[in-house]
Image 1 (spheres, rainbow, N blue to C red):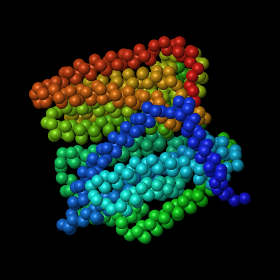
Image 2: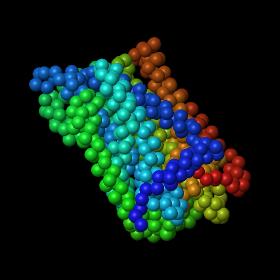
Image 3: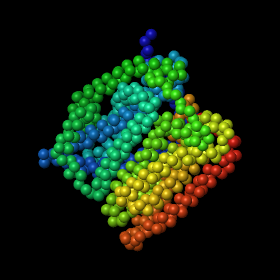
Image 4: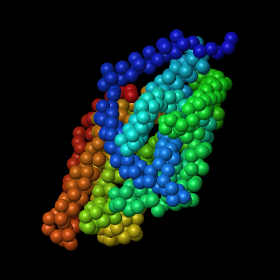
Length: 564
């Protein structure tokens, strides 16, 4: 019997998903703080994008080719590039979502034992993914098109197709993502068992993203300083952009439709590409997803690659450190959030101070390299140390096995703090060396920044470890991996950023205000050393006291770890 789509069963699966979401709200598992943080970040991104994209568009639309202005062509190119970036971003997001929902979701085990066809399950999952992609589409498309509408005076068709595109674009990107999901999953499985290679690939990709980010920051600085970036867009660059836009399918078709050009050709192209990708995706899923279902029900999730033997553990404090290392190193998501992000922290500090220092000095004529370096070090330390917020929760049921060993609770907790501090201190050393070697601060000041950054990291790790212990939430997955950010992680992020802004940010703003009121050449660095040094030492001491306060009693009475 052929595997057909049972739409009544699709509706039942969608109702199940809605009930699960409502259950999360009722049981208080919803990360409200994390939700507010995401909204704030999205709002900040949209605000900055509208400001700088609008200003860039004003400049780009006036660029001439062959000494002739061509505003419609410039707008077509700008929209094509913007839509292509959105399509790439949403396709990558869709690949991740499809891989998670199709191949890694825990409910796959349940469905594998039920009379649920692969196509039916595939459609239900895709509809759920479509809902999530719809939010990305609405934020990105509306942000770009509203910015264009403010600058230009488009007709009614522009607004109509904008709304249509919000609903159509997720269909296109999910169709692309469905084809690419299996190769993506195969590569992921291949790298999962090759931990060093995974670490190198993830770190290089993230470093590349930060390099691109540095170019964006440089462009933003040029716009703020009033530099004429038209000189970058010479004849050869513009010819390259024009040729590239011819092959940016289907973004160029979308741009043509948005601007009211080539209706038939663009519409037919979009429909054919979407249908083709959808059909190919269905054929792939029909032959592959069934194998995944069978593999999950048999308990063999590694249906493509063989399992590797687990290395033997050591003993006492060294064994505890080795356990932490192996757990992180053999879990790709943990390795990224711990090793890769910490390794790249110096890169983030350097890129930001390179732009920020020259920007502040050019705009107000004050050298604030010390305060800016300190602020950036604290800020990125707060963002790179958040992995310690799961020091207890990521143990899962293994925490009870460790608890049953003849090992003191302080040794268990100190091993976690010490392990987190190893990479954090190395990252702080590299950041300080980069700041000193590039001349933004002197070597004694770089040593001071290293000390403050290390003390802050110690305070954050101690506080996060105890806070997570008091609010432990163990994963319900068989491997114990925490795949979603919880309220504890969100709380640590918010508190860390608040400390960075309240200490580093206040010192930076105070330095600027005092220099403007008193004397531009006034030497006020000693105030920074005193204020920041005393506060950071105090916070580190209080965090350590919080970690060890009544720890023995709490540890031996511990029976929490509710499922996430």
